[in-house]
Length: 309
Image (cartoon, rainbow, N blue to C red; front, side, top):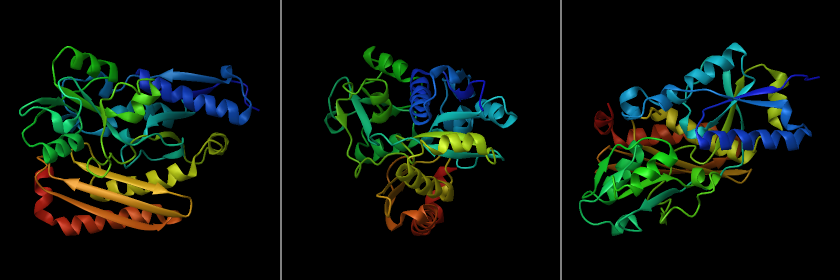
């Protein structure tokens, strides 16, 4: 019988803490446990500390996870809570994504200061975004727009926008909703024209392979449809590269029986892109994503990827 609190690793941002608390609350409800049976352990990651350069310059997604995963692997943490889209497709040996919470809205939110909609921005307006996917999609739709790298926590980006440093910015609507800021967006971007990042809107839990006690605890809060969808998206991402140096979009939806997937790859300047759709059994989620990744890579041709390096 567990006598000491379960230790939950997380980053220290307001959004990361909201996600950790949601996970804890779901576990409390599922197992009838009191709050003092869970300890939320806040860790600073390199991605949090270095905010003056883009993730592509710094080395990619592992910047938001390494310190947490080191303590998880050593046993100092029982499990960790992450934004799924921040997770590298290759995890450290001995760790895996054991549970996903029910997914939030996957759309990107446009927040405009000088215009309420992306297509209504004046020529030459400046948008701030740290995501190469968002930058490429903006350039595809509005090649006249000046896109600059724009990092920081949600609150920091909104403050910079209010101060007039940019005309607009884009954030994940899921994160804004989790922070109670669902009224902030001036436009929610259509998924067909502005598809989300793979795993966007999903909270995942990472734990140790073979730790049956912890994994049994987490199994009760795993949302199988989200798990299937994100598994497909991460498989697509992995097949193509999956770092923060590549503009890749992907979204899968599972009804528990059938899974439907849509993916897109772009050159960083948004001038060239390829789309793909796939469908199959939800139980084949990983294979569907892998096949879609291989097919879109073949259709794009080797020269398409030269601009990704």
